[in-house]
Amino acid sequence: DAGVIQSPRHEVTEMGQEVTLRCKPISGHDYLFWYRQTMMRGLELLIYFNNNVPIDDSGMPEDRFSAKMPNASFSTLKIQPSEPRDSAVYFCASSFLVETQYFGPGTRLLVL
Amino acid sequence: GEDVEQSLFLSVREGDSSVINCTYTDSSSTYLYWYKQEPGAGLQLLTYIFSNMDMKQDQRLTVLLNKKDKHLSLRIADTQTGDSAIYFCAESIMKTSYDKVIFGPGTSLSVIP
Image: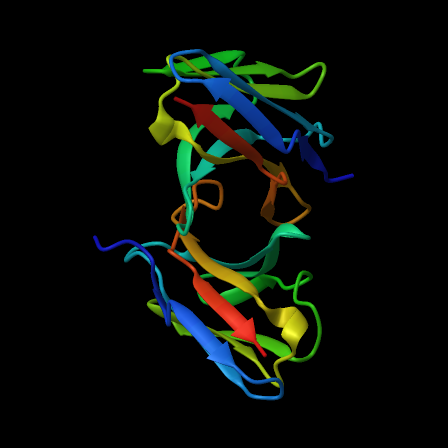
């Protein structure tokens, strides 16, 4: 298996623009997680899905952030409008059991 | 509460043993984990221990769990320069209807040649 695939790997955008991050989990995994990592706040869980259904979205910062999982092999995290404070590395992870998570390489987002 | 704490930095000489410590607060933890993050990469699961175990050994890695003190440690024997990375401690806890994994802030390990 290719592991968790994230795209794009790097994204530079201007404040106010819409940003869409994409994730393909490992086949057969029924949990999918979105995390944000910054120097100041460390690793934060934003939202996670089980069988495509959002289970815990308490970490989503505000209404500008939304996540979807239309099917078992694809998820998106959207920021609209983006702000400079959203600059971070965004990780997607998947797992068969919630405990053993496999992380993707991350998307480095820079909002100017 | 849900909190996992780690010291932020550790520096050791190549060939020495490294010990990375972690404390957690939730007594209902089921599993505890150690993840490794190399520069520019995602987190990689190194090892994990079930909460009813005291110790787990896997090649150069030894995990010790003191459930009474809610203390977890990772010992890396014969530390190599390739072990330089950030190490995250994490615990899984049972919420009322689902499991949740809480990560610590990470310990940056620097190995001096």
